[in-house]
Length: 403
Image 1 (cartoon, helix red, strand yellow):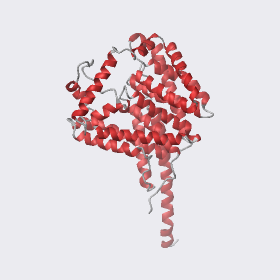
Image 2 (tube, one colour):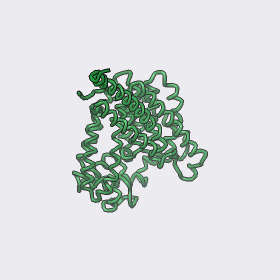
Image 3 (cartoon, one colour):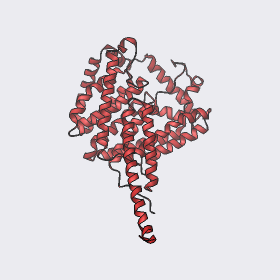
Image 4 (tube, rainbow, N blue to C red):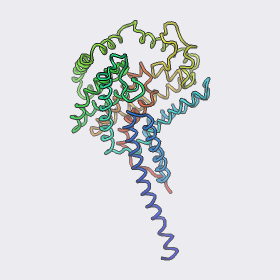
């Protein structure tokens, strides 16, 4: 072979090697996304490690394949929201503390990473696996309640997670996957129906009223989208679940309508405190993670707890921490997301996946009126993954930069 022939033969070999490496990176990235999705219901540390692997693979694929970054359009206001959070951290009374809390923004990478690595063939399988492990997690929570006698010790099931509120929020999202598959996925309804009782019962046993409100509201939406007449079954299922769950759950349910309930009074007080924070700091808020630090300064008469870590309301928490521009950007993210999900839902092949995403967003919004669920890392990771999957199914062919 002459030198000229060797030179002309070199580029194809190099391109082939690059393509082979890219294929391997895509496989590792996809498996890492799957690992993150499955681990997040049991260990946040393992889930974040899997996300790190997936993100590194994503960056490598972009560089090697000279690809443009592709994301659903709801990601852009979410990215702007992250940017404003950084601005708020700069002007915080304690920037170091605020920047430390802002590391959670890295979780937004789930959107472009999953969008790139999860294909139309993989998304339904991913949701089925998440649902199955969610059912196992629910069974463990039921074990904690019944056999470990949590109900007699004043404890609430939390699975393998650190807090019962996180646990209830995660189960709420998994419940949405199961319900969407039951209503819209042909061939997967039997398994969804089998895991549904465990999910329903354990969500009830967590005694997390925000999860009850979120699940009930989102379930009503999916049932109405399937057949408006199915809404009649919703109160029946709710009554049966509460009856089977026992007196503790029944008492907790009735407390929602008790105007003198201490937790209800404290949440009203927190809304007033949040309003004062927003009034004094409308542009950049008091700073991420500063609500707890400044709580006593804004504490109003009628507040029950001396200190609260957050304001138990997503919009108020965002505005108080990060300012009204951040809230506007977040609302823009929600509006675009819901509009685009509603369009995707009309495509029959996407209904089961889009339905799970719609359930997740609506459940987060309804439950988020009483709990800062959007700030919970485990919950946020699973939510972001669920909402990006319908868009990943419709992802166009990968665009590459010209040489």
